[in-house]
Amino acid sequence: MAEVKRAIALGFFDGVHIGHAALLNKAKQRAAAIGATPSVLSFDTHPDTLVFGRELPLINSAAGREELIRRLFGIEDVLFIHFDEHTMRMPWQDFAASVIRELGADWVVVGQDFRFGYRGEGTAEKLRDFCAARGVGCDVIEPVRLDGRVVSSSYIRMLIADGDMEQAARFLGHVHGLTDTVRSGYHLGSKLGAPTINMRFPEGVIVPRHGVYAARVYLENGEDHVAVTNVGVRPTVSEGKAVSVESHLLDYAGNLYGRQARVAFYKLLREERRFDSVEELSAQIARDAAQARAYFAAAETGKES
Image 1 (cartoon, rainbow, N blue to C red):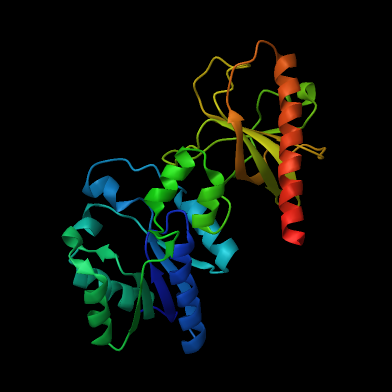
Image 2 (cartoon, rainbow, N blue to C red):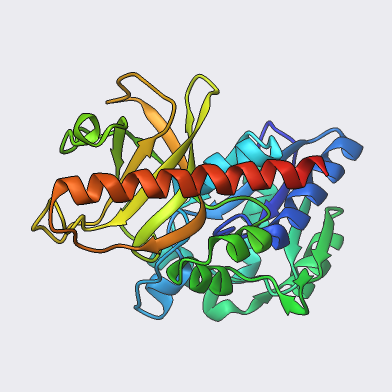
């Protein structure tokens, strides 16, 4: 038996969007009411990968989901189950019993479309009845709608792939971003007049539409800086095909190599393109920087009015 008493939100939580927020907030509310630890239980890889034998590009890695849940909802207890053949073939009753017994679930919260166990035979309704018979609370959360559309990770993936970060942010409830250790890059920053940091998307995570974004870069010390971020293959200065995330930090001086940073993508400014020279690229980055500053200045004005 588990020593910790938990109120657990169950789900995959890709993107940690406003639909997921309804589950996470309910788990926190129930935990406070019954004196339990608010918790999240998820899978490390998407079940569809094994069940249907297809790779699904995800909005976040497992580490990315954990970071969002902790930062946005203050839930520190984030648990992952490895989804393998054994998990896939487990009868739904065994899965539910193990959550209650091994994790100390006194309350569980799931979405209405939650499916689990062998062949997805476990449903939210079956789980509610199973919990009730064992004196465990269970909330089944209705789908959340925005603009008449059910908020879903699949729709948000489509928005990100199209570069529509403003619409994605409305459905996510936060600005989509990438957290990574800053890598040593091509050291073009000094030549282009802005410090540059290079990052990469984890394998299996969806890459936004190639292009230049108005962004903010958040540093470990709590600072954030307006940036112009290029997502793509950098055709002016590289012959390779590897996708990089290169951010030019405005109004910042310093070396961030080897440190953690988070870049948040606010708006697609233009498509990625090849320039005839580094000088021409530098001039365009200056124009991108002016556009990014104007975007954030307008956003601040909108907040104040």
